[in-house]
Length: 291
Image 1 (cartoon, rainbow, N blue to C red):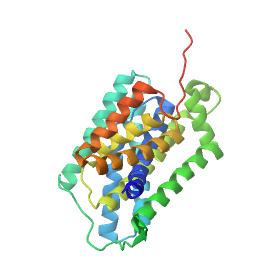
Image 2 (image 1 turned 45 degrees about the vertical axis):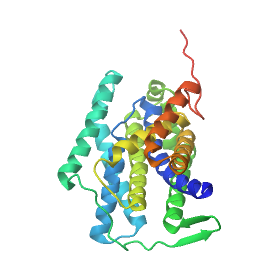
Image 3 (image 1 turned 180 degrees about the vertical axis):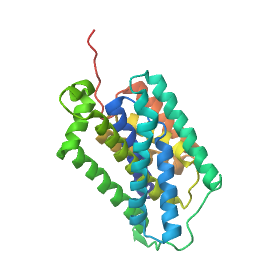
Image 4 (image 1 turned 90 degrees about the vertical axis):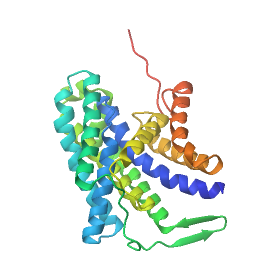
């Protein structure tokens, strides 16, 4: 049972990691917790479902289409809801983020209704492989490989490209980066686009994996991904990846050995424990302020 739950936990954790990356990148640059990020994940799941139902595309095309749509959505949200408040207090930006979250979920309820939508039976051919005590499906392999490729691509983008260098500069000192000639607004918009695209990919994969998509699916997933980002170290990209995986594994082990009703409590219990024992997270760094 342990090894089976480990595989299931890695599959779930990869989706948490993809959403957590958006939280940690945005916070690392402008110190904003984008609580509308879970709703972007939800929109990605619905866009993927729409593409599959309407155009009968495969999973990879559905993920790509959802990523493109949510990139544009993330940039629009940043431009309309966050950029005008950048010089205001953090509380104003936080209230704006919560307002955007409620608006997006309500908008989807008006479009689709509150019901759960499933993929048609047999739309994806899923094969199962027996590896001794572990059974793994072709869908789980696709999810794990796709998530791994996306996370590796993000790491290469940040470390090896010019825009990645600009993102790292903005995360260290926004004002100094602006003085050095970096277009800070463009970097922040690009960060929202990348984070939204990763969340959309996670939304499509989770929607297919659980065969259920509904307007409020982003609320709990977003909160758990935020817990994963804090667990790994908010502002740390490798930390968000690690935090998502750890949270997914522990949640599945808790379901297997305790009860499914504890799965939400496990995530937030881990968050509280992490804040008490190591507030900077697993891979985060403790910061000091000069006075």
